[in-house]
Amino acid sequence: MNYMENVTVMDHPLIQHKISILRDKNTGTNEFRRLVEEIAMLEGFEALSDLPLQDVEIETPIETCMTPMIAGRKLAVVPILRAGLGMVSGILALVPSAKVGHIGLYRDEVTHEPHEYYCKLPNPINERTIVVLDPMLATGGSAVDAVSMIKQHGGKNIKFMCIIAAPEGVKRLHEAHPDVQIYVGHMDRQLNEDAYICPGLGDAGDRIFGTK
Image (cartoon, rainbow, N blue to C red; front, side, top):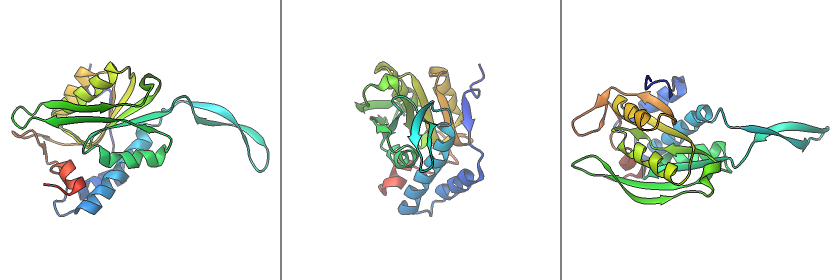
C-alpha cells in the first residue's frame, strides 16, 4: 500500500500562511501559541468531516423538526505531552463536549526513541472517535507508541493530527498503524542527523510554552 493513501496534507491557504509565520524564528511565544491553536482548529474542521450524525427532534421558534447532531459518545482528544497541549483548545472550540485524555512521552536524547511516563484516557475509549494531537511528526516514534497505547486501552477509530511532518515519520506511522487517518498541515523535506524536521520550526514545545 502506498503510505500516502491514508494521509491528508492540507492545502488551504490560511493553514499554509499561518504555518509560515510559525516557522519564523522571530515569532514570539504568545503569537506562536495562538497560531498553533488556530491551525489546529482549521485542520480539525477537515479531520472531523466524517463524524457520525443522527437526527434529533428540535423545536425551533417556528415548528418542530428533525435535524442532525453528532451521534454517539462523540470525541476524545488526546494530546501527546507536552507540545500537543497547544492544539487542544483549537479542537475544543469546534467540539466543546469532547473529552480530553493525555499521553506523556519523552524522547531519549541519544536514541531519539520515545519513553512513556503517563497515560490517562476517557472511558469508555472504544466508543469514541479519537484524535491524537502533536504539532510535529518527526521520526514517528512518539506517534506510533501513542497510538499503540490507545489501542491497548481499546481505542479503535483513531486519527492523528500534526502541523508539520517529515516523510520518514509519516511512513513509519502509516506502516505501524495503517488504519489510522493522518492529517498533516505541511509535509516538510526531511529529518536532519539530530532527528529534527527540516526546514521545520524548531522545538514546538519550547516555542509554545516559552522554555528553552
